[in-house]
Amino acid sequence: MNDSSWGAPPHAGYWGPSDGGPVQGAAPAGPAYDAHRAQQTRPMPIVPDVPAHGGHQEDDRGAARPGGPLFRDEMPQAQPYGAVPQKPDSMPTPDDAQQPVPVPVPQKKTAGRDLGAAIGVGVGLGAVIIASLFVVKAAFVGVITVAVVVGLWELTSRLQERKGIRAPLVPLALGGAAMVVSGYVRGPEGAWVAMALTALAVLVWRMTEPPEGYLKDVTAGVFAAFYVPFLATFVAMMLTADDGAQRVMTFLLLTVVSDTGAYAIGWRFGKHKLAPRISPGKTREGLFGAVGFAMVAGALLMEFAIDDGTWWQGLVLGLAVAVSATLGDLGESMIKRDLGIKDMGTLLPGHGGIMDRLDSLLPTAPVVWLLFVAFVG
Image (cartoon, rainbow, N blue to C red; front, side, top):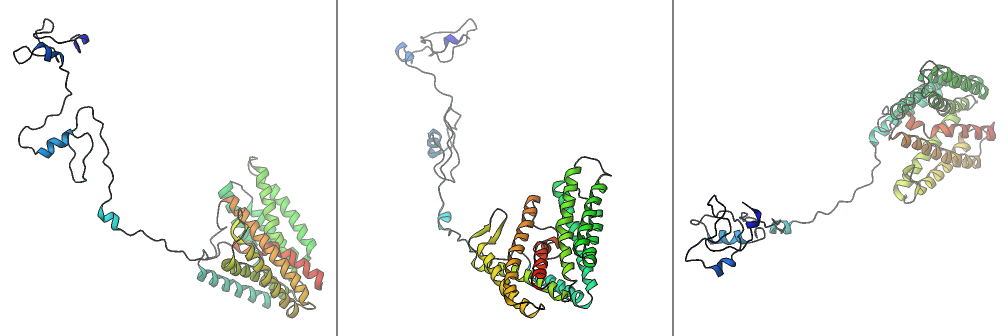
């Protein structure tokens, strides 16, 4: 059929081409149609079949509505051809309107760790330190050596896991142990010589592997040798004095008191962040708490525990410990943020790893050793 026949003015008795079939849209011939009415006829849209009998009036009327069903439980009805389906409006039900709005419960401040496990581990470590420190000094040197080797293992493992840096552990562990012993036996000169030999051993050891990444691996190795065993050597050098056990105990107690003061005051009154990009949990109020607690403890310890010490020297010592311990904590926080980890290890429940406990002690050790030498020789 030719497309031009659609829309042409129909005439009574008009027939299509030679096939004899009537053209769709043309008015049939007969007395019921005249030419005038036939010219006003338009094609009607195709409507789906609806049963003529047996249906309800509401169903017939619903089929002619252009929109969707008015009620949720009303079945959708047939729509005219070409009509765009409409999404029924979301109307709240009485049950939804009567439901109460939940009120958020304020959260209490927590330490973020298992305090019970942390206290238990802390007490156990304290007992080991005191027993080795006041019974046989050489035993405490062994404690320092074990802590250094484990700390190096944690640090090098995290560097390889997170950054692909392969700092050689074997020369670091052997050189670190030699540094601690040399510092105890030969003093600062022995510590420096052992540090230099350890760095050389790291350079040579790494040559046995492919050259890719050599520079970053040996740089990380030398950094690890200085950061962990060399700084720990100053604790062994404190021990060589006549009152060496008291000096080491003062150093440990001041660092712990500083951390405790920072935590207690910061948790209760902390509002202003100290270094939010490095350690969001530290506050300026916590730093003031660390300084106050450490200065009071330093004055008492220098006056009553250290030979020839005075209270004002203890104030200076406490201030220096609070500052160096805070900087040491921030320094390791920078390392852990760069590595994308929270703790260096999981060896100590409630504390993390050995390095998470040495972070404040390592940079504080040379500061305390130097002040002891300056104040009491």
